[in-house]
Structures are given as structure tokens and as C-alpha cells.
Length: 263
Ligand code: PLP
Image (tube, rainbow, N blue to C red; front, side):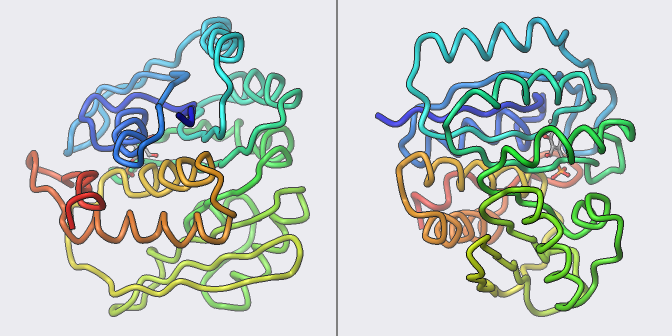
């Protein structure tokens, strides 16, 4: 049994964060474990409060897993502060385990899931340790400090991020203005690149999309798929999860974690 770990925040509403990650891991037949970095009081309407976990206790969770389990892949989600990022990076630096970084910054409702001062820590301490980084367009813009709105700027942003040391960058194009398609762009350190185009689905129920995609990617990499196949399969997982979205709650409902198995 492959063991995969998510290092992320809790979403009490169950559609994003730790909860989305563990549901995705379960659906993809890997044993999910977690290091919780923050609690959010949250539902489909938004985040009403955030409680970061003490960094000492975050380290204790991580060490508890490392002492006992042979972990096949790790992913990070909401890391909230530079202290938390540094604590995670310090431990990660000594490990040789594939790391998928979803550079989570803001929730759909606009609430901050990463403090402004933490962006530099993310760039300098954590991103160089990544195997794959999965920014959406706004995150790619913040991480590179440049506008990203067409193919040339996407390529440029990917090169900037690859230079930090990661093996692969997936720039998720869901925020681009194409009305018909959602296209993700995949770039490798060795120069390979490809894009993945799917039909854009008109739904407001996309809560947790980024978390779920990166969790699926971590699960497939944990199952030892090559990175390119893992990215394609994770895209399939999220496309099905959005297609069969769940109308739960009164706001942005969650994607459907059951869909990959069911359809
Ligand atoms: N809450 C937590 C704990 C998250 O990790 C994330 C996303 O990464 C979100 C909320 C935001 O999800 P969304 O923007 O899809 O609503």
C-alpha cells in the first residue's frame, strides 16, 4: 500500500484542504496521512476564520509520520505563514520523497490563505524542493511578479519557476478568458512541454478544485506513475470531479471526489 501525505489546512466544509486531499487519496487507492497546518471555519459560502497551528506541533505531526511510515509522495496546500513554510522546508530538505506543491494563496471568496510576507519564504525555501509545482494563473503571477495572460507569458513564468529547481511546472489555465476550453500547460526541466485542453464546464461548484487536482497528482506519483502520466491522469480526475459537481450548500459547492471511480 502506497502512503501519501498532505501538508495543508483543514476545510470544515469538506470540499477543499485536508478533507479534499484525503478523499482524493482514498478514491485513488493510496493510504492518506496528514500534517495539519491551520484550521479554517469554512463552508461553501466562504472562510469565516483561520487558526494557524503552532509550528512546533506541525513539526511533531510531520516527525510522527516520518518515524513510522515510508511515504511515497507528499503534497502541500495551505501553509499560511513564513514560519510554517520554513518549518516544513527544514524537514523536507533532508528527505528524498517526491513533493507536489500547490502554492495556495487565496480562497474563492477572497480570504487570504497565505500571508503576504510568506510569499518570499515560499519562493526561496520551499519551491526549490518541489518535484512539481501547480500554480493557477494568479499564483503564477504572484510567484514570478509578472502578468501571465497568454502563451508567451505562460512559457516565461514556467521557465522562471523551473529555474528555482523543480522538475515540472503545471500552470493551470482555468482563470484564462477562453469561454470554451480550460487548458493546463505542463513544462519539464528537461525541455519537454505539453498542454491539456478540456471543455470548460459552466458550474459554480468548483470549490477545492486546486486541492483536489494536486492531491490526485500526489496519489498518482505516489503510485509510481511517471510525472507526465500522473499529470494527465490527475487532469482526468479533476475534469470528472467538476463535470459531476455536487450541489451541496448555498455557495460554491465542492467538486465530486467520487466521480473518477463512478464514471
Ligand atoms: N480552504 C483550504 C483549507 C484550502 O486549502 C483551499 C484551497 O487550496 C481553499 C479553502 C480554497 O479553495 P477554493 O478556492 O477552491 O474555494
